[in-house]
Structures are given as structure tokens and as C-alpha cells.
Image (cartoon, rainbow, N blue to C red; front, top):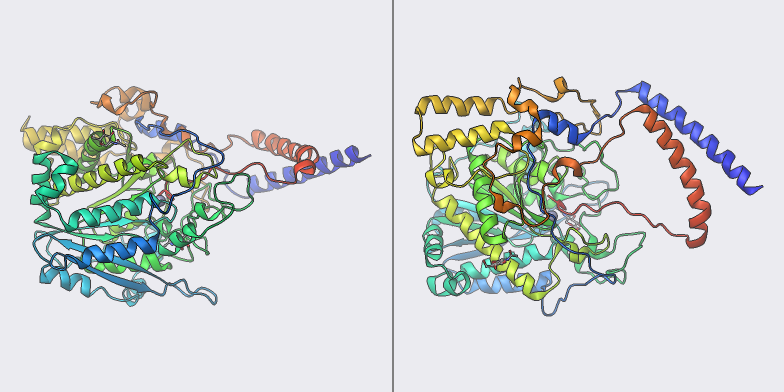
Length: 609
Ligand SMILES: *[C@@H]1O[C@H](CO)[C@@H](O)[C@H](O)[C@H]1NC(C)=O
Ligand SMILES: *[C@@H]1O[C@H](CO)[C@@H](O)[C@H](O)[C@H]1NC(C)=O
Ligand SMILES: [Zn+2]
């Protein structure tokens, strides 16, 4: 009577689970979070989130290391050669970190840092990069700061004071290869280094075919110092390069090497920073790809970059990833974008870059909204607040969002050489254009007044970016009026200030405090009636750049967020159903194949971020 005993077992297990569920519910607040609904309540507007890509395989494509992608050691050797050929304007050095000792292992690694200064490296530049301190710098900061303050992001979490005046040359940092499997990122890094090493009208014109652009770039390069980390995560990258017979196959129990994102401690360098560090999203899973590490700043890669920022004091950072097409601004920990003149100007400029270099394929906006989930302890969020860097952008340069779970190469990287070359060229162009924007003072506060748009920024139509509300739109419109001298200046400034003040806030549940949000809990500041009409209605008021909508890629909006179960009833019936299904599945399927058929969805971007 096999089937009878199975039914009994299922029934008993269901009963036990039911008891557990009731105990859980009574023990603490229930998790009840419908992200789409909460976003609509606070008035987050719908945004353009194109889905790009198409499914290929199986068998899944594998990288061609001979003719298309370069292995790390080859790439590093070439970069040293390029720098060696232009010692007047370029400098490269290797930095080493022990990492934190956890148990009886440390996790040491190194990075290379390339510096480029057109016309010749100044004493100031050389002094900054040659005096990058040891891991001691990080340990000192940890001794003087309370990580709890940074986790809470309270008023005691104070930025590190800057010593260098910000009116001299602009120091910009580009980070490539934060995640090992994003091979395209380091290809762009290498190309960027090569292009800079011989930047002139003669070399840039054949590539970009636009004299005004090339002149702007060269003028900017005369006053910008560029710092490049061609591959941040060397150990991760080496794992990805290690041959694995399971690469390109599906239905595995364990991720093949090409899919590696985290290190052996399940630490993601992009979750290992102190701002909101160690906070876990409400739907966090302990074996997921975005482990925060032992504690903030525990990983050697994080320590190395901390030391670089501390000494270089950059004004801007671009962190280049792949997994989708996107350009993001802080914060990553909140689905509502910061509402300040510098951030608003930057999303406008990102939309412009997106249109010009990517044909509008990118999702633009707050990182915490655009990728479909919030993330804590990220690189860019900390660099903005901790080092006072006003421009911290994450670029997601390529992604096949339709790729299969095991297609880790094709999900993150172009599989055809001509496509790779096209992306490498265009994103290098985008990086150069970004530098011209910084140089021209188009980002408020960088070579320009902190709270004003220039006319050039005001002219860019308000983009339909992710994570903004009517308060952001009002602020953009007010700043536009000021730039064009429309209306009374003082009155317009007051309007902008008021718009920024009434930016709504949203409390995202975390693993340790799964709050049950209600309108009063979700909306921090007083919410004007305009905000309460919800996403769909207010979206109509946007001065939308229609070109952002390509094909059938209309906004999916916040619906990509997971939905938590709405009531105890659903939960209890769900558990019963799951238990019964499990036993049925075991009998019918597992007995036959002995293999797991289902896999969770892979995080594409942070890998993502
Ligand atoms: C980089 O990624 C690799 C695997 O992809 C991992 O071993 C390494 O620890 C990671 N390091 C950081 C700082 O992310
Ligand atoms: C790169 O730029 C070229 C020229 O503007 C354009 O034709 C091409 O579509 C762009 N590539 C991508 C991936 O958008
Ligand atoms: Zn990434």
C-alpha cells in the first residue's frame, strides 16, 4: 500500500507545516509586500524598460579565446605594453591586498591601476597614485567608524573629508570586470586604454567620424585625469576562464565555471560596502549569488578600491557591468531615485548618451528600480556618500535577457565578433562623451553651480526614467525654467526646493524586519494629492521622449518585483499544495530521472550591480 503511506506522510507533513506557519505568523509581523502596489501608492511613475535579446541553444555558445575575447593574462600583458609605449602620459601600477582573515583563510588579490593624463602626467597625479596606502587605510577607517551607523545610514555616517580642491583637473575613475563572467566589460577597458594612449584627431576621426565630437573629447582630455581598473575581480575572472566540461550545458546541479559571479565565501564585491551594508533584501536566499561577504570591506577587491578612492579623490566614477542594457544612478538600496539637481541632470544626460550610442536600448534611472530589485552595500552607493563623489554611474553595457539559465556566456556577452566590436566602439564613445559632459560642467556641482541646470541640460526632454515620481518631474521642470530664465528666479528656486522636499519615501522590507507596509508607513513625508493618483495617470504628464520606446518594449514597470503572499489563507493552502505536489513529483518524476529540473532565475545584472 505504497500510495496510502505516501498520502499519510503528505498529510502529516502538511499539518506540521501548517502549525509552523501559524506559529510564525503569531511570533512576528507577517510579510505582506506587494511591490507593484506599494510603488503605485507612493507614485513611482512607469518607465521604459526595453527587453533585449533572443534565446540561443542548447548547446550554448562558448567564448572564442583565440579570435574574439582575451584571457586576463594576455589582456594584462597588452595593457602593460601599451602603457610602456607612452610613459609621458601613462602610468600603471599593481596594488595588492590581503583581504580579511576569516577562519584560517585569507582571500588575497591584486589589481592594476592605469592612469592617463593627456599632455603629460603632473606631479599631483603621480603623487596621488603613488601614495595609495595599504590595507591599513581601510582598517583605520573601520576603527574610526561605526558600521552600524553606516548600515542604518544615519547622521553619524559621515563622508571622508576631501583634501584636494575640486576646481583643478577632474579625476575620473572607470572600473571594469567587477564580475568575472562579464567578459565584454574588460574588452571595453582594454580598448579604452589603447584609444587613450594615442588619442588625437587622426586616431579618433576614423572611429567616430564626427569632428565636433572629437574636438570636444580632446579639449576635455586636456583637463581630465582618467584612472582605469581594467579588471577589478581577477580571481573571479580566472575561475570563469578555467576550462569546465560543463560549460555550455544545461540541467546541472552546480553552476559551471562560466557562470561564476561570487568568490568562495559567496561574497559579491558589489555587496561588500558599508552603506546599508550587510542588510539583506526580504527575499534574500543564503546560497544566492549576491552574498555580502563576512562584513563590509572584508574582501580584498573592496579594500583595494577603497584605498584608490581615498588617495585619488575622484569627482566621478563609472562602474561597467553587463547583464542588461542600462545606465543607473544611485541609490541601489531604494526604488526611488535621489531627487537632486546633479542626479536629475545625470539621468537626462544618460538618456542622451543612450539615444546616441545605444539607440535607446538602455533602461535608465535609479539602480534600485531599474534592475527590478534593491541591493544593499553596493559599490556606487558607498562611493557617492562615503567619498562624496557626486557622479557615480553604473553602466550595463550588454545583455541577452532571453538567454537560458545556463547560457552564462551569451547572457552577459555578445557571441558574434562584429557585434562585440560594435558595442566596444559605441561604449568607448559613450565614455568619452560622458567625459565631455563632466568637462563642460553639465553636471551641477562639477565645474558649475551645485543646484542649477545648464541650458544644454535643460534642453534635453524629460526622460521616462525609472524610480522617479511627480516630485522629480516638477523639480526637472523648475530647474529648466531657471536655466531659461522663465518666471521669477527666487520663486522658481522655492518651487524646486519644495518639489525635492516632498519626494516620497518607501520602506522596503528586509530579511530581518519584514515590515507590513501600509500607506502611512510607506510614505514618509507628507504627500501632495498629485502623487496619490498613481503611476499610470501621472505618467501622462511627463514630457516623454517617445523615441525611448522601441518596438514592443513598453514599460514592464515594477511588476518584475516578486510578489509576497497576500494572506494567511493563501499561505496555508499554498503550503498544503506544495507538500502534496512535492510527494507526487518525487514519485512520478524523480524516481525516473533522479535529477533536479528546476533552477532559480539567475540575477543578470549585479551580478547586476
Ligand atoms: C570576483 O568574482 C570571483 C568569482 O566570479 C570571486 O572568486 C571573487 O571573490 C570575486 N571578488 C569580488 C571582490 O567580487
Ligand atoms: C553603434 O553605433 C552605430 C553608429 O551610430 C549604430 O549604427 C549602431 O546601431 C550602434 N550599436 C548599438 C549596439 O546600438
Ligand atoms: Zn556585474
